[in-house]
Each structure stands twice: as structure tokens, then as C-alpha cells.
Length: 222
Length: 153
Picture 1: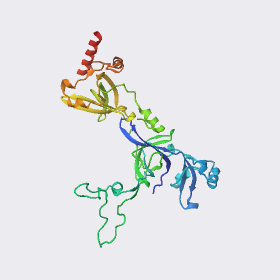
Picture 2: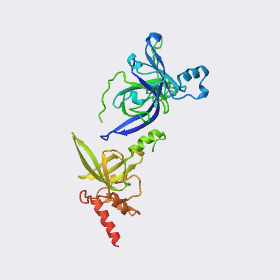
Picture 3: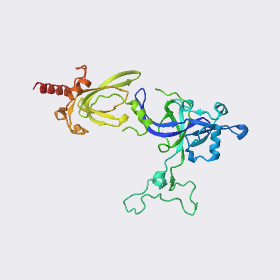
Picture 4: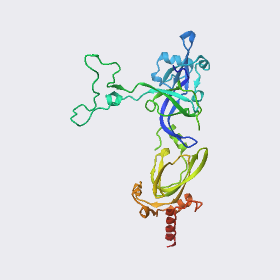
């Protein structure tokens, strides 16, 4: 489980960056935070340690009374998105409820991060688009069977279709995490993180960026 | 094209470099920084611009030259920090945006007429080769001679 601190952010889009040595890095620009700590989970009360972070501002019309009351007490606007980040107790200690966290607090150029987001929804999709099946021939007598998936199993033995059989269905609009993306640049003033590579979801989609679980920090060679 | 997202547009704009106003058909000297091991040096690539792909920060241009009888083309990113300098050695008169037809032509047929466009002299003065003789291309000389003749006449 990822117990590193992260931020909730918004995917702004893709561009490219020239490094000092003149190489091109393809980057995704993410507006990371600022996030507000809206709550804390403690071992005593909840059995685990976590920080609850809020991002953005919900329009007043969408805030009901109990929710509004909760945030008024904290003295902040009701956030659009709230997410919980499981963190180590030492990390949780450093932050107070109501405190703001910005990109500069969490990320550094050169480190690796994992980015999660909701992938673009493609609706109910056939087997060729969803699983990359090859389909069938357009000629040689093939007839009304160009984009089908073929057989889905055998006969009496096993007498059933195996679980997990790749078939048509909903494609996309699902939480996807991309691991080990390198942070190319952090712009604290603009609140931007530039991450090398692609990130799931459409522009203006909500993503979470966390320090990578599987890859240790490595300094970025300029 | 620059991005419609203001933050990204600003990022891209900040990386744009000052580039001389070269056009397709111009003969240019591209001073390109090259790394060999841990040493860095500048190599000059001289040839005709046969394509200018205008795409904001992602813009590139293709330069074609004949090297030892073999056609060589290189694509340079316009805004790369490795492109040290671009000199305009001569301006050619062209009627196409992409000069792919030059690939089919050899020798004398692969020449371009000097541009008669207004302002050519000024551009050459501002962005031309300052240390003449350092990179002497036949095309450049020819173009200049013609212009001299035209001026005398």
C-alpha cells in the first residue's frame, strides 16, 4: 500500500520541456493542490493513520447544511474533492487540520511519483477496441463476422465459460494508476508539477499524485 | 499552435527562443551544439531549408545539403537550446511551402533563384553571415553576385 503523502490535483494537459542539455521531455502538466487538511485519522480513534485532504472549492449551492457547518468550523471553504491518504504516523504529525499543503511541500524535481485518475470513458466497447483482438478477414467469404471475438470456450468439458474471459463491455471510466513517472519540474509559484509521460483521464480531470511506491528517489540529471 | 490552457501556454512561451526570420528556400548555417563524450563543440550544418513545420514550441525545420554527392537532410527543433545560432546565408525564390522536389533534382537543376522579395537585403544584413568566408557555400556566393549585378544595373 502506498503510504507516501500526495496531493490531489487537476490534469491541465500535455506539452514538452527542453532540458538544459537540450533534450526534450514529454510532460503532463498537473495543477497540484493547494490541498487543505480537512481531517486526520488516528490509531487511537480509527485504528489507522491517515490525512484527509480537500481540493478545490465546491459551489455554495452544492454544499448542504451539515457539510457547510463542518467546514465553517474549520474556517475553510467546502472543497470539491476530498480524499484520504494513508500515511506514516511521523508524516501525519507534521500537519494540522486546516493547514494548507502545496506542491513544494511534497514534490521535488527528479523524484518518481504514481499518478491515479479516472480514465476517459469509452462506453460499451467491442472486443477489438477493448482488448486489442485482431478480428476477422474482410474477404475470403467472411460474412458478418469482421469484428467478433470468436469462440469463447470449448464444449461439454468444461461446460462453462472461464472467469475473466475477455469480452465486450464497459471500457474506460475506471480508476487507473500509472507508476513511476518522473517529476521533471516543480513550479511552486504556479502550483504546477510537470510529470514525464502520460496521465489517465481527460484535461481538467481530477488526479492524485503520490511519491512512488515501487521506485526510490533518484536525482534527476540535468 | 500554442495551448489553450493558460498555464501551459505560459510554459511554452517561456521556452521560445529568438529565431531569425528564415523561410523555406533560404540557405542557412545552423550552428548546432554537439556532445562527444564529455566534450562539447559546435558543428555548422549548411543547406537549404526545405520544410518549416510551424507548431509553436514544437516547431521544426528540415535542412537539406549535398555531402560528398549524397543528399543529407537534418531536422532541427527550432527552439532547442542546442541550436546555438541560425545564419541566413542566402534567400531563395520558391513557390512551394515544402521543397521535396529538390530530392529528385541533381546538380545545376537543384539550384534556387535568389529571392527578389522586398526586404531581402535587410534580412541578410541583420541575420546573414557576419564572418564571411567561414562557411562558403556555392549557392550563397551565386546569390550575392546576382544581387550585386542587379544593384549595379
